[in-house]
Length: 203
Image (cartoon, rainbow, N blue to C red; front, top):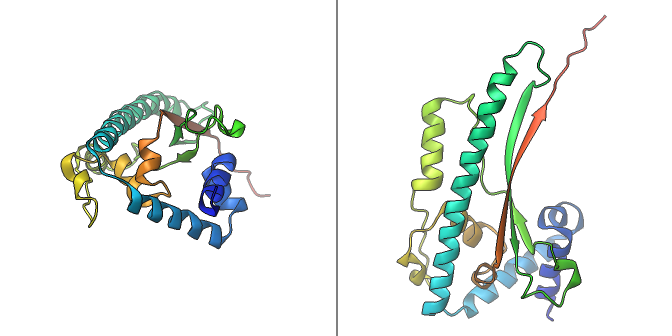
């Protein structure tokens, strides 16, 4: 196992967000980027691999859209409750957690049995207190826009329309093409946080 894989598996065990916040050094983050660059140069854009990435892209598109729709439904329950003068709810936030599993690939690592090898929060939610047209435009950009960006060496990926989440993974995370192709399960959580604020009068 090379140093790149060691750092990658370390972030997998801790969870990427915790790894970035508490455990990593700048050199480790550079190692993760170097690992991605090295693996991407070695990746073979075979018909099978392109088909696999296209399939994962479609799943990410469908599931992220469904998660956003669910968030809107949850919001529709919260908004009327906030109008009740006796309500506990002062405000709310909606977040998305996306986790990726590859238990067969990492079957030799006990810590990754039942745990994701990578997680992220790439989707953001426009709350209803924003301008309605702005919310609609944002959602349309997320789910109806072609997010394909073709760079030298990966023209083969332009054969299918990239979803926002797929684009985010290949361009803005530490995951290589091979990591994405190795995904076996996708887990998306819609996290609704209900908040209460109470101002204490000053004497």
